[in-house]
Image 1 (tube, one colour):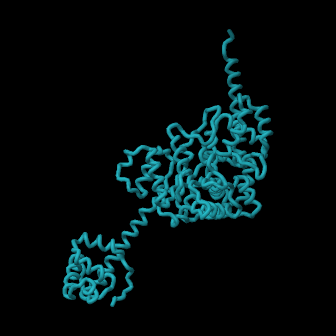
Image 2 (image 1 turned 120 degrees about the vertical axis):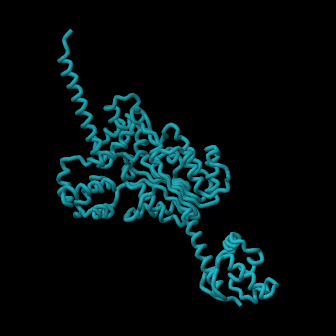
Image 3 (image 1 turned 180 degrees about the vertical axis):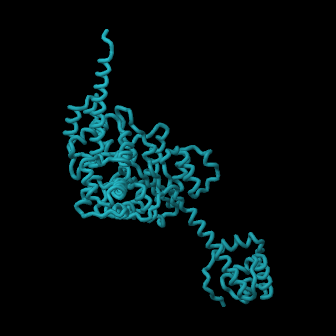
Length: 469
């Protein structure tokens, strides 16, 4: 007859492993396993075809070797407690080793973006008809790509066997990222990963993604994409020299058959993502846009700022609902205007919305543009409205003297869209800029024009000082 207690059953494999470490013999282990399954001494003797004194002797030796004290049934109870505690510890270690959050941000206090989160969860976890292998979260700087990726990853993590987060902010070579992924994820490969070719590492990783459901997050992918600064032409989605293999990696992950998912965040859309995404395809893109009014209010409330809906809407429109910009504004309102948003808006009527850290943020993105992209950004900002491709082409033809500018309009517009610096009006083929971007571009245009005039005047004055031949 079995003895009943409330300690959960412990797997035989774990018990055998512990017993072997303490030199418990095979015959002793046979008796011990039955005792741990709550069999009484007489039942153990019958099952093993030995006497009850032999059972007591074998169990006694097992207890001694395992360091268990007590008498009678107390010994087996104490052993169960000890083994169960040890087993729980190993399971906690296993759980920890299935998650590597790297440089993921804290999402405590994150609110809003509920619709976007639900959509991402549906894509990442998947269903019987569709499961995404690659998901990209895109948007301009400060829009909240990293934090929403972290929030979603936290929520879907129980659906995956393994999760690993890596940031590409410092532009690590693909070889380094692959070695980190392979070093963390389970593999039967015994060779040093450094000795494997890059292509074989990708193939090995895909094999792991097929055997285990993994979620890999790569943050700040724009860091390995090429800047077009100083170039006449240059489009979004191209890679820095030496980083082209990231494109091959994304393509292989997207095209291979597996139930895992690669989630990336970027200010710019990699060209492979652009080519592979589609409504009924396993590659999806979420373009993050302006916060809703209620979500913006939450950000301001965190700083103690309050206002009526009309002023809040004006503020959100002025800063295009960008979370980081609103946080910067909230700090300014707190520090300089005693949390009075109306006073801040009154003051800003004569000032640029793109000030301080907001200006720095936009500088970073604008400076990556080619000359042709910058020209089109200036033309769009000066028009201050959504305009058609035909109008853009005509405007560029009349005002931009760079050769081939007119013939490159489609490429330029597509590139600016991929850089999250312009947007398309819903249900039309008209394009424009967010308010804060438009103000920033106009500021730069005026500054450049002022500089050019000053430069011309300086040269004229200098020529007057030069002696006449």
